[in-house]
Amino acid sequence: MDNATMAIFVHEIKNQCLYTEGAFNVFNQSFEQKASTGVFFAAQSTLLAVSQLACIIWPSSSRSRKRGEEIRKVLGLKESHPLNNSRVRALWDKGDEKLEKWISDTKGGNVIFDHLGEISLLDPNSFTEQNIYRLYDPKTSILYFRGDGYNMQAISNAVADIYTRVTQVHQTMFPDHYKKEGDAGSNDNADEKPKAKKATKKTTKKKPTAKKPAKKPAKKTVKKKKTS
Image (tube, rainbow, N blue to C red; front, top):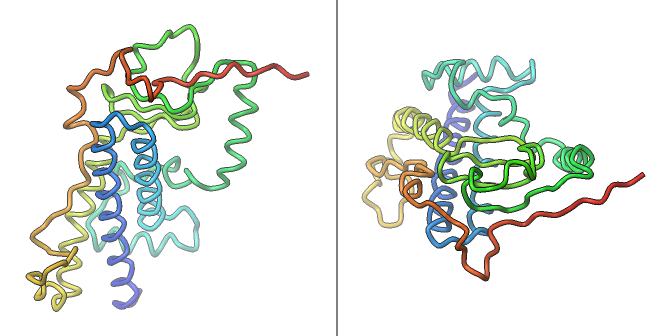
């Protein structure tokens, strides 16, 4: 890969890390305000950016494998990195078909949508994890989506690691850019290390109970009718 091509990939990886940081900021602020719509919007934005990172750095297609190897070498990343995850890479692929399959698989059972709170406070006999479409548990930092769990704290830490590495490379590739770091309004100041905000550093101390704001029902459970 030539230097110009690598520079573009490096710049885009850095941008995706910044987008993840922004999404985590909204995520944390929304959680503090018990705004479930904001929490799940930000969580989805986070997973979208993280999926992009994983696809660029650990591509699954054979024709892109060499590109991934070269990028990981430049960034000093190993195969065993937490974001090297096939579920994360394929999270948004054929999303409509995955939704249709989830609906089919959970037919006849109770399903949970957009629940913000500890899963341990729910009746374990009324559902299974497979029947959770969207839920965030602040105690465990796990976001459930279509029956799968994603540890938001682990994702935050993994993105912060990539950001540290890619910023160092970015500085060597774009030295003129960092000479302007004192300019007002620059979002790429090398001294301002964006941190993918830890999803639960401020929120794990909060233990949501059944006393939720009346305007925001904590749990939406739908009894799905069996069909012949």
